[in-house]
Image (cartoon, rainbow over all chains, first blue to last red; front, side):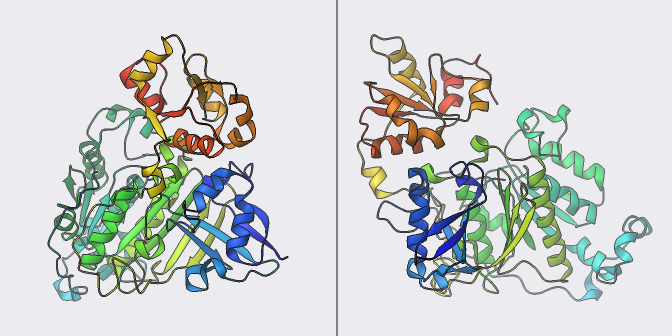
Length: 92
Length: 400
C-alpha cells in the first residue's frame, strides 16, 4: 500500500504534536485521509461531514492540484505523493 | 451577523482603468513624498497618479487591516475606505499596529483615521462605521476599485466575496490562524472566487477561531502587507496578481507555498448562471445531524452557576490548553486538553454529569461531540465559555 505525506494545517497540529506533516497509508485520497483521521476523532470531524464526505470547507491538493479537479476522494495516490489539507481560515 | 436572507440589487461592473490624461496631477510636495516610487519604472509619475486616483476598501480594521491600511495610505492611494464597528481593546494591541495604548476604548475607525491622516494627509479616509451586511455591501463595495478582506469571520468573508463577484471587483483575500496565513486574489470571472475554493463555511464545531487558538502577532502584519502589495499592483495595473493562486504561509517553519486554484464552473456565486444572483448572508454551515441531535445540549453560565451550588454538581472539564488553564479556570475543574480527550475520556466514566467548557464555546462543542460519539450521554457544553461566565456570573476572573 502506498505511503503518502499529508501536510497538516495549523488547526490539526495539536493532534500531530506540532508536526507539519505525517505519513499516511492508502491507495486513494479518501483512504489516505481516513488513515490520518484514525489518529484522532477530532480530525475525522474536521475533515468529514456526518455522511462521511469530505467537507466543502476543506480543500485537498494532491501534489499541488485540487483533487476536485481530479477524481476527488477516489483520486489514486502513489508512493511519495504529497497531500495538502487546506481549510478555510477566517482569522483576521 | 444573522443567517437570514437579505436581498440587494446587483450592480454593473465598472469599466477598465482610466486613460493617463484623465488622472489627477501630482503637487511638488507629492513629488517629494513619493520620490522612491517615481524612481521605479513600473510606477513612475503615471503610476503614482493612478494610485492617487485609486480607491481601496479595507473590510475589517484589525490585524490584517492595520498593516494594509498603513501601507496603502503611505503609498498615496487616494481613498482608503474602512469598514468596522468595533472599539480598540487592549488585546488588539499585540498585532493591530494601527492603534496605540491611548486608543484603547476608542472606536477603531476614529483612531484609524487619526493615524492614517497623520501618516499621509493627502489620503482621504472614508469611515464606514457599520457591520457589512447583505443590505449595505453592494453600496459600499461599489464605491471602490479594489477590496481587501481583513475580516475575522466566515459570514463576512462570503459577503465580501459575493459583493465583489457581483460588481466584478478584485477581492484581495487574507486570513490567519495561529502561525499560518493564506493569501489570494479572487477576481471572477478572470479567476476563481472564494466559493470556488471553499463552497461552504465550516460548521461551528470545526471552525478554527483565532480568539480561542491565538495568533502570532507578526503574522497578520506579514499577510496584511502582502494584501497591500497586491492591492497596489492592481491599482497600478502592473505585475502578476495572485489570481488563481493561493499562497500559504507557515511562519513557524517559515515556508511559503503556492497552490493553483481553478474556477469551479458550477460555482454557486461566480458561474455565469449565478453571477448576478442577489447576495445573502451565509450562516456558518450546520450539519443536519447536529441540528437534529437531541444529545448535543448546552448549558448557560447562569444555569451552571445554579447547578454548581446544588446537591449534585456536574463534573467540570476544561478542554483548553494548559497555558490558558493557568490564567483562569472554574473552581474544581479538571484539565483535559481537547487533543488529549480521546485518550483520557476514561477518566470521566464515573461522572454522572459532565459540563465541558473552554474560552468561548467552540472547542467545548467539539469536545462534547467527541464524548457523545464515544458513548457518554450526560454531557453538556458551556455556551459562550468562560467569556460568558465572566459576563454573567463572575466578572472578577482574569480574561485574556
